[in-house]
Every structure is written in C-alpha cells, then in structure tokens.
Image (cartoon, rainbow, N blue to C red):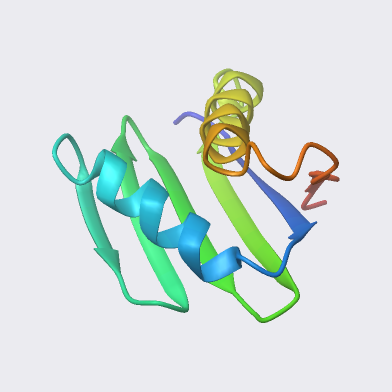
Length: 99
C-alpha cells in the first residue's frame, strides 16, 4: 500500500473565491471536479485530491497525494494558482504537512 501525505496551505488574498473557481473550471475538462464559490474538490487521479476553501481573507488548500508524488503535485497546484493570481505576486503558500 502506498503511503499518502496531506499538505495544507493558507494563502492570504481577498480574491480567494475567484481563484478557487478558476482552478476548478480550468481542471474540470480533465478531472472530476465539484465546486461552489466557497469550496472545491478536484480529483487529480492517481490518489491525488485537492480540496479548496475560500474565505474573505484567504484561500485554503489541502492536497493529499502519494508520498512519492506529493512535492511535485504541491508545485503543480501552487503554480496554477499563482498564474491566476498574477496581480498578487506576494501571495504566499506556507505549506505544512500533517504529522
């Protein structure tokens, strides 16, 4: 059985709902996606699940992936979100892993 790891990040932004919806719509043509303005879930396949939450002040990201693929998938999700948030170059993703 492959070990999985869950990473979480909270990125400060006043446009969290916009970015959540953009990412979900962007990947909806390729992956199973459910979302509304405040919550999203993307099944990226191969055991990788991205769960998003939007508040007025931040975007919460939870990424669960096989341990050997987690760093790459964190990078993929973050790079996509940074592209959508190009007007916010200082938007930070401080990832922490579940123990």
